Image (cartoon, rainbow, N blue to C red; front, side, top):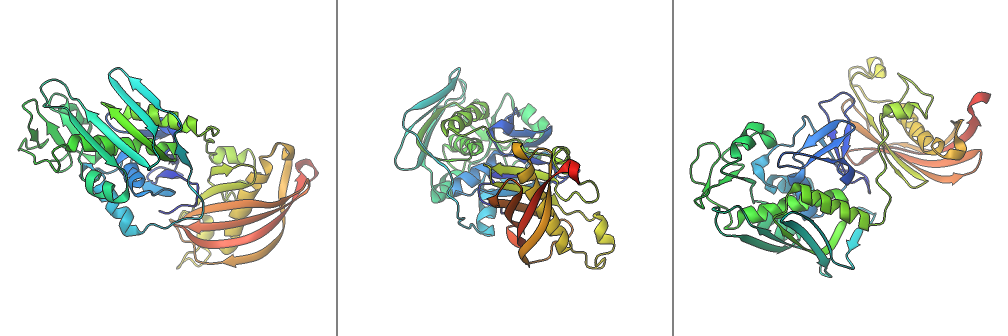
Length: 407
């Protein structure tokens, strides 16, 4: 689903209570068996690299990705289906500029005989990969590409995942990517042939160097967690997910930004806001941008108590409760400031209120609040809510910051 600017990639585990969010950031990358795994506050999403690679190749960011299990589906063991789905959904240019990292000097990370070297490049992103397998698995493969949407779609996306003959039994046993099938993976054999993993029948390669191309797919997906466009020429030799993750961390540090802020869950929200069930309308704070902007999330469940009496035959979230959710999100922004510790944000006026469309059970309400004016005792905030990128409610809110013990 589309997300607001500067959101990045957020995976939502819709199968778990409260739909916990797992961000695709360098801090969330965990250890996975031959795949990239994200882990945040004990919640895991596995095998995210093929989707993130499609996003990198097509220059798509700012997505909320709902998954009803701990693993992304295999979808052919490559990025082609993810890329097709993204393009069919339509790609829209947003107003904010995505960070761009232009290398000024050569950087490198390495581990044993594996290495990734990145050099300055004025012509965008180019990747060269050298695949040198164990003795007996044929000749060394090398593949180079200047990354663009067309090149990704034609030269990279169809390349399938693979395993070696001696360790593929473990790969099948773990059933990564929703299960290994004859159509979504290759087995490279010591006699130089490629076979299908289940039937053992000969497999026809889509490219002579398909394994090397798939390694580039993995690399592009793994560095997506750096959340930046990259202008560089990358040369990778025998690198895998772990080294790719270390390279992404190096890129993130080069941006000179602070470490990504940890998301605030409902327990931490209760430490700031006085509201409690059934009137706490914010489930999670996704991001705080500097001092003046905040993004929150409300999962609109069919079990909300107001649905029992508010148009029960056609349940919609009351507009006044959308406004309340926005006001509480704004309160989180105002009350997190050190000088406002011990205060309560009281809503005193609403201006320019517009209710644009209905919010129904099952929707995810994205809540955005930005400070317009702020004084010691008064604040004006512009707030808006969206579902799947569509505006549902907006207003300008004025708050009085009062001492909690005086109320």
